[in-house]
Image (cartoon, helix red, strand yellow):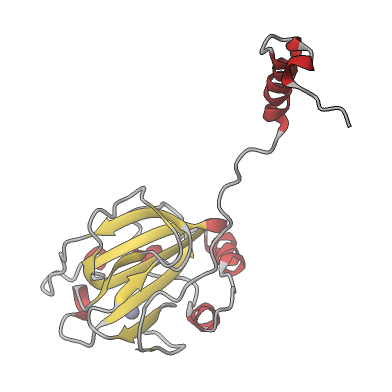
Length: 211
Ligand SMILES: [Zn+2]
């Protein structure tokens, strides 16, 4: 077999001019690149049970639909779903003398998640530093610690967990504290299920219009 030496190949093969071999390669890359798919946003995370460690909770809540998840004081509270933080309350403003509805949750967070679902967690011991309105969270991200702030003062540490439509987004404490019972969804997530409250939230919103 005759050996091919570099000097035998046509010189224009190595030119980076538009007609040269590399020029054609570079031109093809530049021409084809824009039609390749853009980087995809990350796939949605599976839902997560919002309290770590040993917990106890039941299907009933006083007065309105919500779930009190009892756990160890200081246990980690995590985001149940991917979303954007709507509100964070770092100061416990509850005063038993006035018992204002908006203050009963003590230290709290609310998150807007996919499908127009809002998650609310309250009575926290602490809220994660630097968590604020607009912060993007992924399911499982730490949000704070289980406590007994607000009107849970003096009773066992628990996370009050509420599900509602986003509604006004901020300040609407009556809807925010919970309008759809979280129990069946919490049971699913605890068993690594993916049950979503979106349909139940939409049904409530169609009937009540956030009032
Ligand atoms: Zn509660």
